[in-house]
Length: 428
Image (cartoon, rainbow, N blue to C red):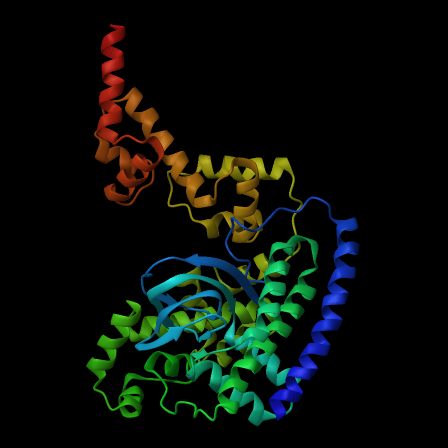
């Protein structure tokens, strides 16, 4: 019954927010008339969610997801594997995928059309606790999302997924706080319907968590392999092998990845200081947290926060040209997107957005383009070996240089040099 009450409250909340967003959108358009589409760029982490629309015509490879997501089947039928469990897919099936779960479409009987609503599980749960006092209800919903993957006959949710997708397509015309509020209302509704399915069908929630889910849920504690061994009745070595097989990470690497991912969300969406975040996430001390963060993100937590929560820099042609010039001038160095972000006090998302606008390339694409063009110039003017040229222009391996050269020039480096030499001989 409490879930029915929650759904009713959510619907009223959604109606208010949607009407507000339409009004705010009109007001916002009057203030900002020249915003770029975010379709071709990385997801902005300042949004609590993101939604995509996909067609699936055949078997997919297993994918390990660091973030939670709801997958809603709008059309089609088939079979999906979530971790090691198989589930049937049919029209209006809803799949709940928790962080660090693996999914794989194993069979497609009819072409499958799906919505994928990605979100931060921790931010969602934190908002649940902020909005509602019934802890039993909140824990039930959280467990249903984590421990029961597939509910069926969720036709009533098609409207919510469509509206969320419409908002994502109109993301530049609605203020960010309104979008986040709307996304949250949809997530609450979807989660409630998913939980209600198991309550109505008297399906017991699973009681034994999967190893990786257990690590995610307890990452703020001083969790060890010995503890996992006792919980899952497995040896330390077997648990380590399982984790590596599932994630290609060691236990320590996985725990660190989970903590740092949670840290990025706290840095962006809260005003907690670095010490507080360090303690909340289970790091032994502030220094350990900063060092771990920098190893994964190539910048300190403070630099990361300033990039995403700092003042916006005017997006004009002069600034964009400066970014392009900086990349070309430093392309032979071990240049990273983080370094460019810090140099221009701009988030990585905004850097890629601006580069797409002015040169039609992301940072990685432009960096490779600059390096390969520089390599071609060296080939034209010197007899230096191709291997040496690969390292001279900034690549750490010849394989990476070779792959990018072929991709950009449609020649192998050797074929390119031979063609140039033939042209020179003809001229002589």
